[in-house]
Amino acid sequence: MFLQTIDHAAGADARLQSLPQPYLLFLGDTAEAGFAKTAFGLRDWAADKCTGEYALPGATVSTGLPALNPVQAHRAGARSLLIGVANSGGVLADNWLPALVEALEAGLDIVSGLHMRLSESPVLTEAAARLGRRLIDVRHPPRDIPVGTGRKRSGKRLLTVGTDCALGKKYTALAVARAFADRGIANDFRATGQTGIMIAGGGVPMDAVVSDFEAGAAEMLSPDAAPDHWDVIEGQGSLFHPAYAAVSMGLLHGSQPDCIIVCHHPGRMEMLGTPGYALPSVEEVIDLNLRIGSRTNAAIRCAGLSFNTAHLGEAEAFALMEAESQRLGMPVADPIRGGAAFNRLIDRCLA
Image 1 (tube, rainbow, N blue to C red):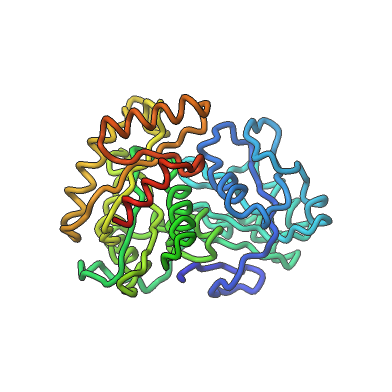
Image 2: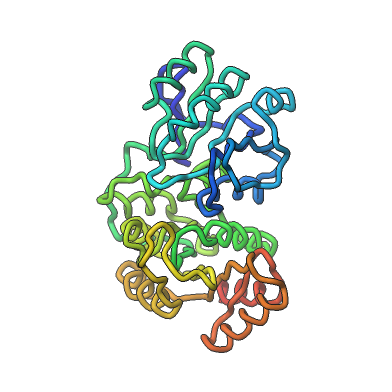
């Protein structure tokens, strides 16, 4: 595992063995649920590690966990405040700083998956040093990443790809890994984003890797394995996104997936954060990923599609997925809803 931490109380870098848990999830003043995917991911996949949530005035997003301030959370057992939002650019907002200092004063460390290092804030650095608290960044890659080689590795790999950002690639990978395990299939969930890393306890933050080393980082994340072992790799971005396509390309080449699952949010019309850019069709996404992915694995195939139908009623969701499955000739499922459609998708992955 390649997760790193910056321990500013000790003043040195160190390999992370475990994050201070339980967490108090910090939501800032977020009004867009898509930017709070870290908080929702922890709630859905590591609820036992979460004490509650802490939001600023103006926030309209909630995980549904108990609302606690830092003092209340510390009394309830929390050991760190985890920044559960990822704003555009991944920066620390100035209006967050008083709340983060409040958390340090209450006895909590701070865990962040933002691009901006916590130590870049003089306010936080001073407060952490004064109080003996830790500022822990997980979105920073190891220093010894090689360039990609394209060498074919043993074992099997599945990569989740998407029509856009923040629509279910992590949830799909986690659900598939769990379904494989339920069937007795040896596998590892390979985290490539800050939320996945916080859930899994390790991984490589791919969007923080220099572009020339993206493929090498993916190769390092998913090394040689037993012939019947699967690495289920969390996808990032979209090949069609005007801002984030680079990380998707490097991850696709370096992962060398034997199969992909295309993740989609039906009804979403524009790319997240880039008004005016329409979502591609799922057919376009399948075609482009297979063409590019075949460069490092000629046998790459699409196992099916994962739809995020959280905004739809159950009957409407299943009717839509069945119609799309018939139209496309492959399984279409919502891993969170599960059911026969998801079982067919898992069957197709393992075929």
